[in-house]
Image 1 (cartoon, protein in one colour):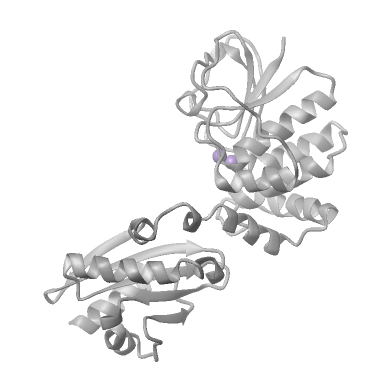
Image 2 (image 1 turned 60 degrees about the vertical axis):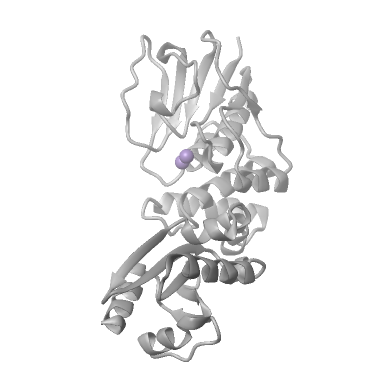
Length: 306
Ligand code: MN
Ligand code: MN
């Protein structure tokens, strides 16, 4: 009987790519295995599958209950595909904390403290002496870069970096450049409305009787907002008017360049200029090395308003 390989619900790039690449490895070893998924493919993963010309795994909303299943990128029943019974599990490849699975018999179990399941799977190809195809290398690399936020996440280890570098080299891809492309493809900018982008991570403050709002989005390159900047500014004006704010600042934080572009309503122009002691353009200013709303923006605004 065929064994299914599946990632967690609300699958991310690591879950989908781990399922596909691990199923491929087992197939290369002569087993009857198929990758499946339990939910919708996100924009980032869609970009990866398109780029490396790999078909999305089949969507299975609910298991029948008699299949053999390998879990990748998770090991907790609460995150697993619906219909799964613990005794269906014949393997686990993961990099998360253990979450209470118990089985009748022994299973293949691999859990390592690395930044991505696909790092472990790349090692399994090596251990089994199975050649990684370009398509599989593309998926493995993408998942590692996605899960480690291009090596920036505190969960990223030297092993992740080493393996990603090897994969990138054989694909002739520049890690930083490709990583940014990947994150752009999955960015909220393309999926949320201007108002939703502003309110996605948003806080309201009252200082000396003045009400202000400060939102923040984190992106990989400021060019990502080029097309929506005018719409964002319009939405800022709307919210200011609606809520009676003194002003609203949207921090567009560029994680790569490590700075923030502040967008604000027209009337805030001189306030922002004075508060940060900078020359501002009409409704924007770029502040180098400013990344934290809590530590670098709100205190400046509160001091200014006081
Ligand atoms: Mn995941
Ligand atoms: Mn993961």
